[in-house]
Image (tube, rainbow, N blue to C red; front, side, top):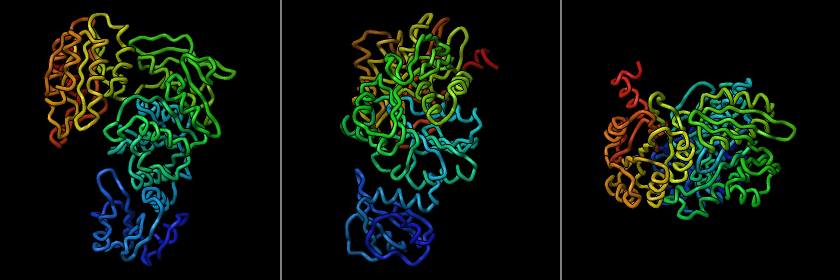
Length: 481
C-alpha cells in the first residue's frame, strides 16, 4: 500500500516512507522491510523501547507518541488510536461497507450477539460475528484468540466479511479491547449494554475504571440499547448522550421494550415482548430470567435496524440457543447443563433460573480461574452455596498459578455454609465423580468452561471438552447412542 493512503486522515508529524507498506504491527518481532511499527504503552511494556529493534530489522518507519530522535520516525498523539486507524486504512476501511453492532457488558455478550446474528439471518441477511466462542463469516467459522481481536486482525476479518457478501457485522466489545482502543475509529449503528458486575479487576484495578471502559463504547454509537434493570445501565443512560437511546426492562413499564407475563421453566422462558404499538409472544429455549434480558436486547437491536417485531419474535422463538450458554447436554431421568458462568453474578443468575425447577438435588461443579481477579473466588462460592444441594469444587484454567492455592481461596465459603461438597483439583476426574453421583430428578450444572474445549495448566493448553466427556459417560451407561 502507498504510504500516503495508509496515513490518510491521521494527524502526524514526520516524513512518510518512500516504499510500499506491506504490514502494520505493534510487535517488533514481526517488523521487517515494508513494515510500519507502531509504538504504544501497555500495562507491562512500552513499545517505544523496541523502536530501534524494529528499525534494525528493516522497518519502513516507526510511529511514536513522542520524539525518540531515531531515523524514519513519525509522531502521533496516541499510538493505539493511530494503530487502529492505520489498520483500517490498510484493509480499505471495510467497516464503512458494513452495518456494525457492538455488545458490551459483563454477562450476556455472546448470547446477545449470537441471537442478533440468528435474527438477521432468518430475515435474509448475511451476517458476520466476532466473539468469544469464534468468529463467523456468514457460515464459515474462524477460531478466536480474543473476545475482541487486535485492530489488525479485526479489520482483516471485517474485510473478509465484505468479500463474503455480509452486510452486517456483530461483535462483542470487551472492556480490555475498549481500554486498548482496538475499536477506535469505528462507527456503530447500534451499541448494546447488558449489565455490569465484578470481573476483570486484575486488569482494570478498580470498578470505576472497568465501568469507564465499557462506557467508552457509546461515544461511537448512533443508537444505544441499555438494560435499565441493571444499576449501571441506569447510570449509563443518564451519563451518555447519543442520537437515540432505547431502554429494555422486565420490571419497568416506562422502558421502551418490556417483558410481561413471564413463564419460566427448565426448558426455557416464555414472555410477551411489549413495545410501542405492538405485543409479541416469545418462546425462548434458554432458561433463567436473565435469558429474558438477552432476548429483549437482541430483539430491540433487530427492530431498531429495521426488522419487523413479528419477524423478530418468530426468529427468537425458533432459535436453537447458544453453545455453552445454559446448554442442555442431557435431559432424561436427570439433567446435565453446561454454562460459561465464571463470576459470582453469572453463576447466581444461572442457578437462580434453574433451581425452582429441580425435582431432586441441584449439583454444581465449578472452579476459579488462575492469574485473574482473586476477589471473585469467594463470590463464586457464595453464589453456589446459595442454591446448590451439593458442590464440586475443581479447577478452571489455573494457568501458571498453583491450583491448590486457588481452591484455598474458594473453599472457606463452602465450609462455612455447611453444605455437602467435594474437592477434586483435576477437572476431568471431578466431572466423572459428579456424573456418577446423579440420581433421578437431579440437575448437574457445569459452570465455567461453556464452549471451551481446553484447559490451561502450567502455561500449557490441553484438550478438555466437557461436551465430549459427558457424551462418552452417557454412552458407557447406555443412555445415548
